[in-house]
Image (spheres, rainbow, N blue to C red):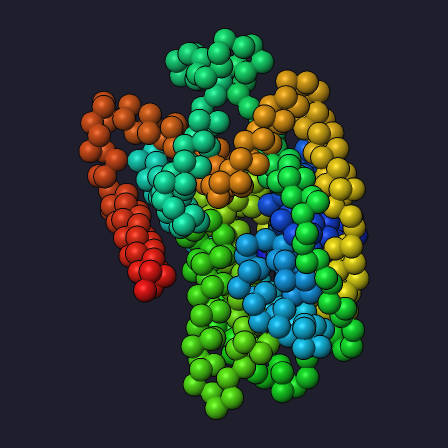
Length: 501
């Protein structure tokens, strides 16, 4: 009952006229960026992070909530209408969604996507409301050794899952940890990786890293492809932007199954919603084979419904893991963690006590954002698709200027702009060679926490390393990490064996 009363108080804050405006602004911006191929909610949050310094914390975080889910809604529009998903989380739903569009059912595919995202997000957010405070209270049992185990779990699980190559995943992790330790070491006062350059003593700001590697890296990557022949044909979308009763009945079981896949993956550091969305797609495909008239390959509505619900359900519970444990389970969640830190708040067990009013307003705004996004996407999805017609050279030039202005606004430092350019080139090289970005973002955010927790644990135990595995929580976390690694290795060996066969 406490959760319900706190949520009602949160609605009282979130439903004020000004905060409703911020929800709408976030939803519009998130959807607009998500529609554009290669972008997504992570880049939208990264680009907006520098320009929210002057906003009230509640308003800024409410706007980020709209951006967070708006990006997921928008990702699917490009995939369905142009077979170019805005982000990797929308790939699974694109297979059947684009086939539906080519057969003249684009409005139904877009409606299925929007309703599935709404159902998955609402169910997951409801679970977060009632279970995140409990999870936070349990997390008060975490000490330095437990937090170190949690950070290592996030590092290894993310690196193992998000890349086809474990070596590439660990390389991304190492890059992130290296960026995290640049600057003056607090306890010892020693400089690390600064090359005795005074401008590097304070380290590299998280805003510079996120904007450079996500936004500028993507700009350079797209610029390197301009001039190559591409199929950018946009399928027109007209007709009824809703589902018939029979279509709704057919999609409903897939929405629920997809939500069931996505909910648990939100608290697992697996780098995003790619894994549950593909699991949902595979399940619907196997079930479809039992039908007298299989629809997969012809534009199956269940092939859109399941993955879309799974993706937003994962995003919803990922917010719970972020708020209750301070654990970012995807690149977007890692940047949201930086947004909290920007206002002097540290997500984790004490956040509900120290900043309860802001947290409950944020949770309430998630429900509001879902409704706003459903209204924006059902009738107006064809209008969002018009963004795909913007010439890439103008679009990405504008993103570059906006990124540079945002970075300069944070510190008024030319050195930060030089860092941004260098890290942007690094982000481009990582994309070129298939090195994932999610482990970098998570390592940059959680690296200092892992280092500080390790030092504190060893200081308390007077250097005894067994303290790192001396509690049931650490043993469980390391065991789960080992299981995740084993399953990942087995899955990749099987997939390679099938490919060779």
